[in-house]
Structures are given as C-alpha cells and as structure tokens.
Image (cartoon, rainbow, N blue to C red; front, side):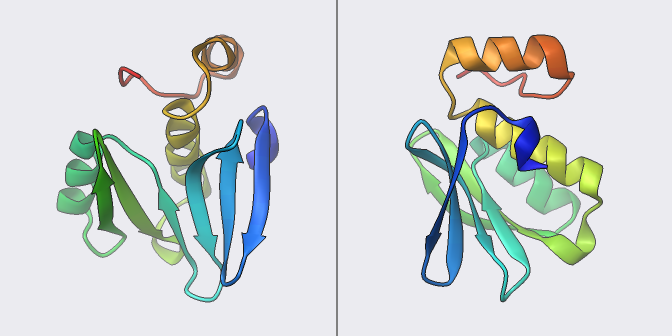
Length: 112
C-alpha cells in the first residue's frame, strides 16, 4: 500500500513505525494494538469519529490538523488506502501531491 505513495519513509521507533514524507510525519503504525494514527483535517477527524466510533477515535489535534486512530480490524483496505493517501497529501510538498493526484486517482481535496 505504501509503495503507491512517492517518497514514503518508514522508521521503527520502539513500539511503532513512523510514516514520513520528506522528514515530516503523516502516520504511525502500532502493530501490537493493530491501529494506525493518521493525519487528517480537524473536520475529517470529527466526521470519521462521529460516523464510526467503533473504528475511529480522536488521537490529538495540532494546529489545523486532527489526528485520528484507526482500528485496522474495522476498515477495508481500499478505505484505509484512501485515508493514508489523504494523510500523505496533507504532508507532502505541493508539487509531489499534484503529480501523484494527476496519475493515481487518490488524494485529498482538502486545502493544504
């Protein structure tokens, strides 16, 4: 899944794996708890949690971003890919995002 996103770097850090693009974090995977934390807009965080609280929970907010915890057992792979791609799009440089969105059909409609 991550191979579809240009420039993704993975760093193991204790109990989790950090997902970064150009040194900036957009996600964290905790294999032990089978969860992933993803960067989102605050509006998206609120909507996801309200829609399916058994799958999504708020992690924290930082500035204009609301990170969300995703329980992997409750989400289909295609929806997870879309959320990971959106998190990546919120973090990657604009030119990289534009090129990715033009060819992939995935990405974020949110302003960066």
